[in-house]
Length: 388
Ligand code: NI
Image (tube, rainbow, N blue to C red; front, side, top):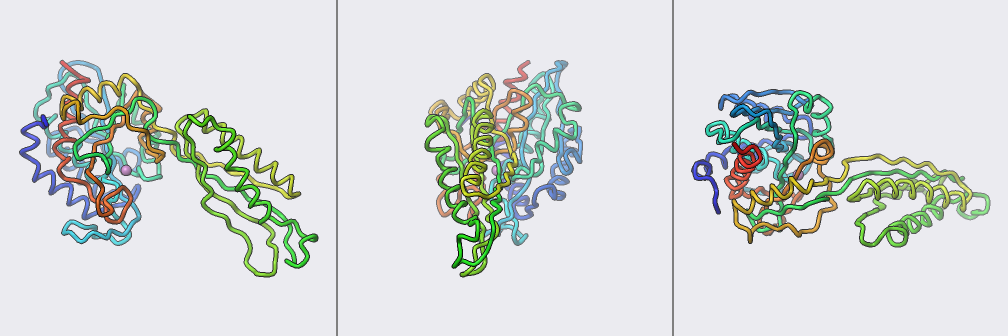
């Protein structure tokens, strides 16, 4: 591996920072200690630092040369509402809160890159270091954009990186096109008429209608979707009734929809509504349909993906960079950045994922061996895109 020597020499220091953040996890939009740690470190390096963008977001600016080109490198800072089961010294000190997605590592890798970029400045333009809050389902990236990130720091492209258990440590995966799915939630309420379970003819049973609806919804995936276009529709909740001998008034169904394209997303939303209405009508009751759009799909731009693959190959060797892995149906807040500018979000292998070391698992931990690799990737990427 062609990891930058000066960064490799600081591996112990980066590991200390990473483990300190790991031991002090903070949930979405409450990353006060982490944001202050990041901002204080950037300032110590002489980097122009902006706090409080999108609530707890931090931005650092490193300029070199005279070019007006600007790119954004993004890391995330928040932890998850999970109680850690690891017993090592740097385990979470906050019950019910844990860095189970490696954002402690992402933040540290970008800090490592910041130090090297600020010291060497072998590029021409501006690197915008984006430390975003609330990646885990709370839209911290969208909050930073809504807070004027693009107007204040006009990036022409954004780059992101996430560790990936199951991919060998230090390997990279780069996707051109979709890499992560849209993550939407929905609620359907079926309003029937309750009554005595012995006299169903006097009732309108929302449980029978709801059961038919669960089956009908699955035909959207099995029958009306192009089988070559990925989509997931999961019914994850079905609430109805309280007694053994009473038919309830209503049933509530909830779940999630994942897609890799806006077209599929819009089609499923519309079809779900019409199936809910149709099934309700068949059973003689009224339906209520609520669809809540979460993160859009993360779509990597071809040009930026090619750049990232080139930089990764130069860093870790062609044989350690995959461009053919399938996308994940998980979601990613980087999608909001990628929707604004041509962007690329890569995976860096975290190792085999043994002992539950998988994302969002109470036994997960970020692999510190990646710190110099990821930091070197950021530096080489900035030097490549903003080449003198
Ligand atoms: Ni994550």
